[in-house]
Length: 152
Image 1 (cartoon, helix red, strand yellow):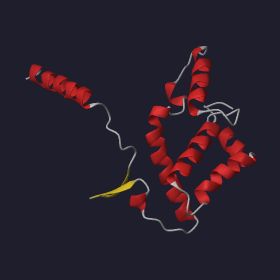
Image 2: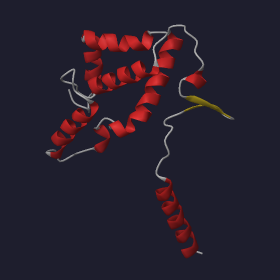
Image 3: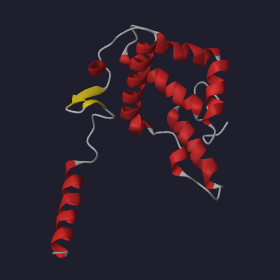
Image 4: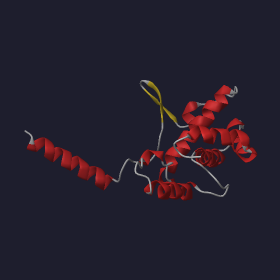
């Protein structure tokens, strides 16, 4: 299975009893966010080519990156998210959990599951982290201001 063919990962989910148990977390009306996050990470690893149950997301990324180095057409987006992106993965898993709960008839409050209310309706929360450090954002802002003044 390769990252370029996630449908093979879906097949593995249906065929593997361990993954069926993981997916069942999303059906549990009382699942806690930590269990949902762990389940989401395991499914992500399976979709990207998990070979061993003890494989971590980081070891999988490293293995896929190593394989990609020998190819002429390396495409970065085919690598799964890193642990540093775990916050976004957690938010996504929690929103998926909410969706499954609604499908099976358990109404839950979206604002408790990584959605926020805006004047235009609900908006998904992708992360609670800043896009960059304040120092870096300040430096980017100053560079943009300098460019504007140079073109006046």
